[in-house]
Amino acid sequence: MKEKLIDLFEYTYYFNTEMIKIISENLEKVDEKTISLINHTLNAQQIWNSRILGEKSFEVWQINPFESMEEINTQNFKTSVQIVEASDLDQRIEYQNSRGTKFENSIFEMLFHAINHSTYHRGQINSLLKENGIDPILTDYIFYKR
Image 1 (cartoon, rainbow, N blue to C red):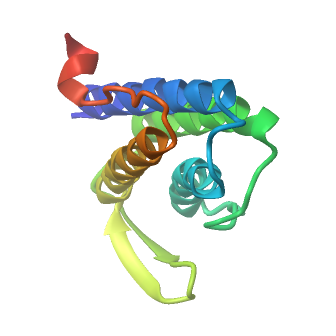
Image 2: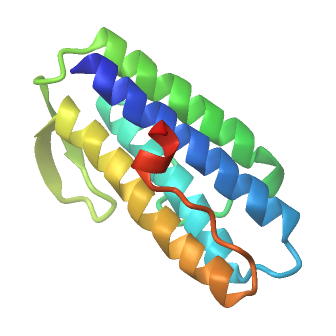
């Protein structure tokens, strides 16, 4: 199970990197929503990692300097993999969402959500890229594995 989860984080890291790259190559064409969504995608993974580790997290919709995107993505990946390798994935963690509501989920559920959440927003970003005349990236997991 841990190997499969790490594989999914490798997939997430790879396509987040590709999204950052295509956005940076087309900064003059992309809109604010695209910038907001790539930031949100990276912020959310950092937030879920931080909830598991009990650390300070980013804000959900904070805008980071574009030059730091690759570094944030890399750190998110490394932290997520470290969590997978060092944790009992069935362990339940109490946390608060951005509105202060308390929840409890397993580490596996939290990590899988972070992966799924990234996939969802990369799809939105691809739609925005296309609307702005930029060829979207094929980000389906099966294409990654081929």
